[in-house]
Amino acid sequence: MIQGFPFFKRMRGIPFQGLVSFLLVVAGLCIHDASGEASTSVDRITIGAGMPAAAFLAREIGEDKVDVITALPEGSNHEFSSITAKTVSKLLEARVFLTIGLPFEEQIADSLQNRNPKLIIVHLEDGIRRIAMGSAHDHADHHHTPNCHTGTTEDPHIWMDPLNMIHMAQALEAALAKELPSASDALAANSKDLVERLENLHETNLSVLRPMYGATLLSYHAAFGYYADAYGLKQLAIESEGKSPSARKIADMMSPSKEQMIACMLIQPQFDTPPIRRLASRIGLPAEVIDPLSTDYFGMMERLRNVLLNHYSKDPET
Image (cartoon, rainbow, N blue to C red):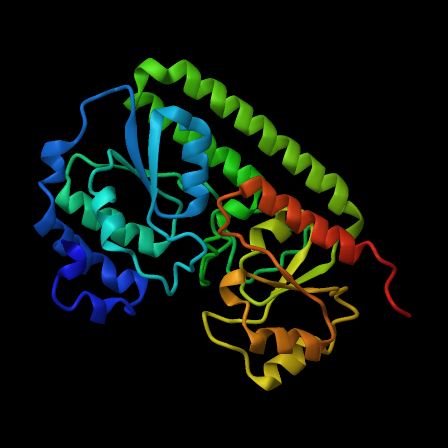
């Protein structure tokens, strides 16, 4: 079995990206050529997804017509997690693999397609305009352009804007209809229902968050840029490019906190550690855990909105 392959235990701690190729080689020793076993059935297909947001879309639109395998383990962080051999074996049997623009997804997709040339890669992120990592746009005079990210690192958390999710849902429905033509009507109906729910979510967010226009969201990890950009808010991230901040940087960031209307610190469960909790306490802000990698997209979005409503609707201290 794969688990018994020499050195497997020793390599468990290797970051997600660095372990992908190794496990694909190991999996190749333990299963038949995926390209020769790819299902020809049009009734049900297996879909691989790099991120939970893509897996969520696949389940919502495909329902009982798809089996969905997510590369990223539940509750983990794509920057540090390791893909398991069992997951790789399942991904090698997929007919479609979905990406939303993160580098590790491209590595997985390339490796899988090398092993299974018939695998179809669907880039759900195509056509979505990007913002810069950590950007805080002034919505009074800013308009997105494809060059928003020029000279900076692109923010990959595109799913945090429900309108981007609508774009990806429609792209996925079109891709699945080609693979499951007999289910095209059901896929279209599911997609329409999902899009309506996402539109309602967006409209509710616009209404509820309007009084907070211009407020700053303090987050440890810069995962809320698209959300802030969509609703007239600003994101201020403590972590920078995966590095913890210096004491000087923290002091510089916190000095204008009242002017920036900062009311709480957003922490992902993947970064919920005692030192970060102590940092929030030292700053004098409550810490709120929000998981952008949750498989319950609507639940996560509702919690985020309620957290902001609870903290930012209060009268500021005088």
